[in-house]
Length: 143
Image (cartoon, rainbow, N blue to C red):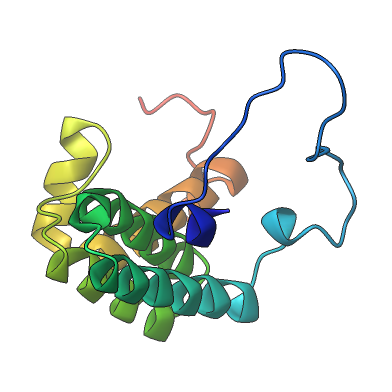
């Protein structure tokens, strides 16, 4: 769809009748799958789309693609796929994305530690909150 839009195809909207796309919860759906191969494939596809957009003179896609690359980086770092995360974050920055997305506190933490390290730290804190602290003080009064 995106490639078609970049090449100038027209989109039609049907207010009633037959649909072309059906949302379903099949386990083999690409959009529901995760992992190294999926993220690497997404990164490659969006790099190809950026190349196509440039060739078509579609520079208006730059900001949106920068956001997509950032999201790929986020997912990659969150899942420990650092090599894909570093390339995706580099592409996002290359396309002009500055700073980080999210709340002020999370943006500050990402700015200080970097996105990868911020995700590692918050992941550790979430695990400790769920399973209890190493000192055994969760749900106990600290008198």
